[in-house]
Length: 518
Image (cartoon, rainbow, N blue to C red):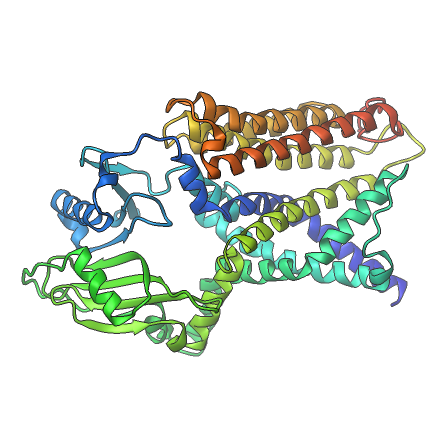
C-alpha cells in the first residue's frame, strides 16, 4: 500500500476514534454491566426483607396488579403491558402509556408488600439507569439514542481504517506486548492486540448498534419512495402478533392471567412467557398478546401467542420457525448485541469484551496525546492538555459514577440514581478540568478505586442489615468483581503516579511539566 494511502487511513482512524471514542467508552463500560441486568436486579434485592406478595403465586400476584391498575385508572384498560415475575424481577410490573398534550406519559406500577398500588418512574432502579446509559451516554433519551446511531457508523469506519492500518504487520505483531522503558509502545501493542482479537465482536456491535438506534430512520426512504407511505401497514404483521380491532363497547370479562398462560402453553408447548400485552381490557373485542421465548439452538428465540381476551381463542402463533426473514434477522441481531444466548459463558465473555472495548477507546485517546508530545520542550501544546483532561473527566467520571450507582442501590431508595451519577460524573469532569492532567489522573483513579471498593462495604452496612457475602452466591460474585476492579484502578493510579514522578518531564503526564502553551 502506498504511504500516502496509509496515512489517509491513519488520519481517518485517528479523528473518527477521537470524535466517537469517549461516547463509546461509556457505551462499552455500561454495556459490560448490562449484560447481567437480570442478575443485578436480584443482587439489588438480595438483602431485602421478603415482601408479603412473594408468598402469593406469581400469576395470582400479576392478576391482582392488573385488577388494581384498571380499577384505579380506567383509561389504562385501552392498552397496557404486564411484565411477569421471573427473569425481569421477582415481582410483576405493569406499564401504561397515557396520551398527553406533550406526548405519551409513561406510568409504571407495582404492588407494595401490603397489596397497595405503587407508581414508580418508568425507568426505576440503578439497573435501568445503567442500561439507558449504555445507549444514551446519559444524554436525553431520544437525542442520545440517535446520536449513538451516528457514533456507531463512525465506529464502523474506525474499525475498517484500523484493520487496513494494522493488516501489513498483523501476524508479526498480533501477540506482541513489548514491555520496557518505552511505555507508549506497550500501550500501542495492547491497543492493537485487543482491537484485532475482539474484531468480530466490534463488528457486531457497530452493525447492530446502528440498526437498533437508527432503524426507524433507515426505513424512511422506503416508506416514501417505494411503498407510498404504506410501509407500516406492510410491516404490521411483523411488529404485532394480531391486527388491532376497534373495541365493541360491550363489556365482557377478560380471561385471567392464569387462564391466558394456560391457553398460550396449549398453543405453544415449551413457551417461557415473560410478558403480556393487553388491548381493550374488559371489552368483547379485547386482544391479548403473550410474549416469551422458546429454548432452542437458534439466536432468535422470541415467540408469542395472540388471543381473544374474552374467549381465549388463539388467533396467531409466532415462533422463530415461522417468522419472516427480516424479523428473524432483526431479532437475531438484537440477541447478538445483548449476548442473550448460550447462558453464563457468553455473558462473561461479553462482560470481558465490553471492558476490553472500553480500554480500547481510552488507550486510543492516550496514544493520540502521546503521539503529539513535544519531546524537546517542557511546555506542551494546549490541545494535548485539553484532550487529556476531557478524556480523564469523561472516562474516569463514568467509572466513578457507575460505582457510585452500585453503592446508592444498596443505601438509598429507588429514584436517586440519575442525581447520584450526574453529580459524580460532573464533579469528576470539573476536577479533571481544573487540575493538571498528571495530578488529575492519579486522583480520579484513586476515586474510582475507593468508590468501587465501597460497593461490597455498602452491602454490609446497608439499611437491610448485615449479610455475609458468602451466604449468597450472586452477592459474592459482584463483591469479588468490585474488589478486583478496585485493585486494577489502584494499580493504574500507582503506575500513573510513578510515570508522573520518574518519567520524561516533557509530557502532560509529568508533574514536572510546565502549564500548557497559550
